[in-house]
Every structure is written in structure tokens, then in C-alpha cells.
Figure 1 (tube, rainbow, N blue to C red):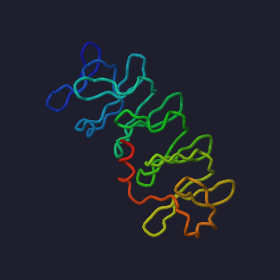
Figure 2: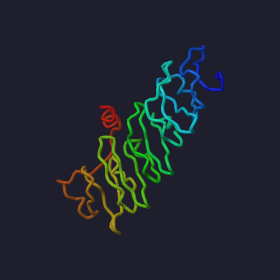
Figure 3: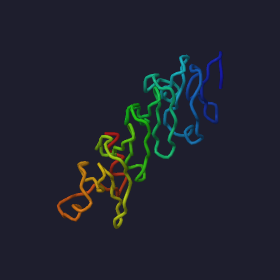
Figure 4: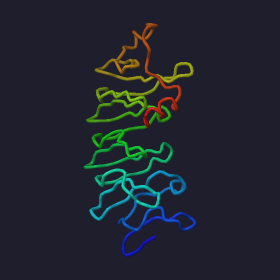
Length: 193
């Protein structure tokens, strides 16, 4: 709804979710109106922030982003600033700052492939960050698990649980615990603690 040239949001029965104090909102998904997730709002300078939908419209992030898009299946917000991308959680916590060229959510959103200057890196839900140094990255199914498969300096291999590169021929060593996906929920909980 609009009042005095400013925009706000109401729910289906007319309760105010966000008062009319903003210049606009980013893309809006129907399911977002029914949940408590914040909404991306735009100020008079054309910058976006996440704002509460509890009737107050209080920002939970700074108005610093050129755009914010909702990633509806994960509840994440894809942010953009000065041509770089990042991710903010619905709590306002910055998961990835706006310093990456691109990223891909894979392994059922358990691991994020981050791209910077043509190199790949990873962020895992348990907080493991692996800087973008790999030429290629993918997944390899072994039994009921997916392993992180990488190419590094012309060599193929896997990553261990600490993010170290293990050449393909060394993966038979039973002492090496390879980085893998088997249950997203175990890692998602760690983001919010």
C-alpha cells in the first residue's frame, strides 16, 4: 500500500507488516508474506536493507546494498554491492560479504561454491571456508554420500574435512576423512548459533 508517496506492506486481512516509510521493496514472493522473514526495502537513496515485518519496519541490516533478492527455498538473501555478490541470512547475519563474482548453492544447499577471479572456493554450513584457489569444483557420488571433487594446478582430487587438497590416488588411505555431504540439517543449525 502507498501513503504520502511512501510504500508499506499489509497482510491479507489488512494488518500492517511494514509501515509506509520506504520508497519500494525488492521482489516479493507470496510465501514471504506469510512467514516472519524480513523483506528487502529500498530507501530514498536507492539502497536496500532487510526490514522486519512485525509492524515496525525496523531495518536489521544497513541500507548498503544495490539489490537484495530472496532465495526462497533456503531463506537466504542474495545481496549485491558494487558489482559483487554476497549472502545474508534472514537474521541479518552476513554469511558471505559482497566480494564474490558469483556463487552456486549445491549439495542441497549444504555447500556454496564461491567464484572469485575465475577460481573456485567453498563455504560449508558448519563454517568451513576454503578460499577460491581451485580451477574446477564438483561433486562425486560414492555410496550414499557426495564428495567434493576439485581440480587444482592441473591435478584432480578431493578435499578432506579440513579443506585440504588430496590427490585422487591418495584417497584410498583409510585415515583420510573426505569432505562430504550427507545431511544438510546438521549444518544449517550451526549457522544460527
